[in-house]
Length: 165
Image (tube, rainbow, N blue to C red; front, top):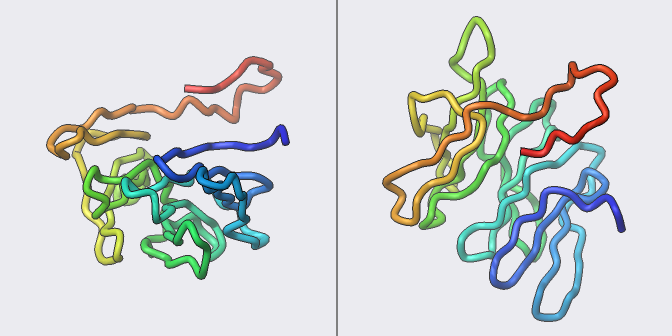
């Protein structure tokens, strides 16, 4: 298959997007399973540090929100409820929080900031006052690397090159 996108790896699984749905492959037996099957668009799947939970973004409720689901499948749990889009970026090293990018609380223009929500749900907290599109926490969770801009630009009319970061 040529359209596999946005892979995330752990010791035991590979999760990816195919056909706007989340899929997971168990590396012990190479069995691939479709985790979501909705008309919605799922994106940005990220495996938890222990490899057992998938965090992903989905517009199944109208706006893009953060969801989690077991690598074994089941009903996803919605974690964010703000009207601004939320794009999953990763996990805290201990697996207790999911990091996501959103333009919430930035007006009049939509500047992205990194926020965190508990993996079990609850209120979100801003990770940094520095604006950022993507980021990764250090192994001890005390430092963060921030990418301040998105490389995807939909207004490059007629541009034929790539837009990978």
